[in-house]
Length: 142
Image (cartoon, rainbow, N blue to C red; front, side, top):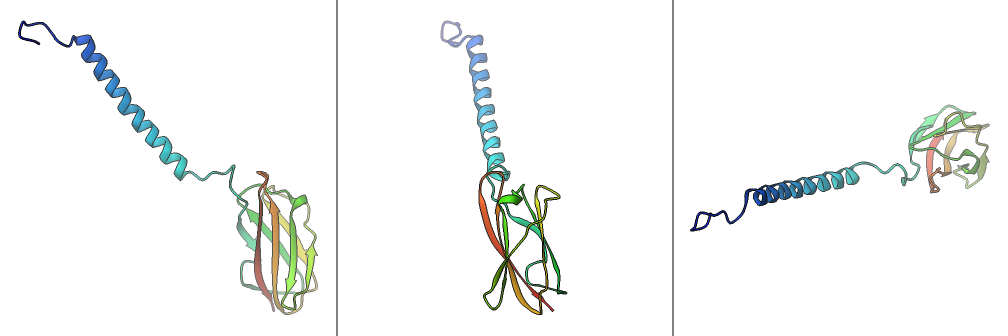
C-alpha cells in the first residue's frame, strides 16, 4: 500500500509474481534432475561392446586339448562381421570359426588340438550401433 491507501502492487500481480517464481524454481529443479540423469545413466545406444563374461576367463588355466570359447557382451554384436583369432606363445595365429549365434550378445567358437602352453584369443566385434571393439583374453592350457 502507498500513503494514500491504494495498493501499489495489485493482488493479481502478486499472484502472478509468485506463480512465475514457483515456475522458475520448478524449471531449474527439473533441468538439474534431467542433467543428473543424463550424466549418470549409461548410454547403451552409443556404448561400445564390452566383454562382460568369457570362457576361458582372463589368465585362466584350462584343460586341453579342446577348449570351448564363449564371450558374452554388454550389447548385441554382429557374429558374421566379428572375428576370433587364437595366438600362441610362438607367435603363430589361427582364426577360429564363430558358431551360429544362440543369443544376440554372445559369440562361441571351439579351439581344438591345443597342447600345453600359453595362448590368447584376440577378438574383434561389430556392435549393432556400428562401433568396432577389440580385445584379447590370455589363457593357458595344461
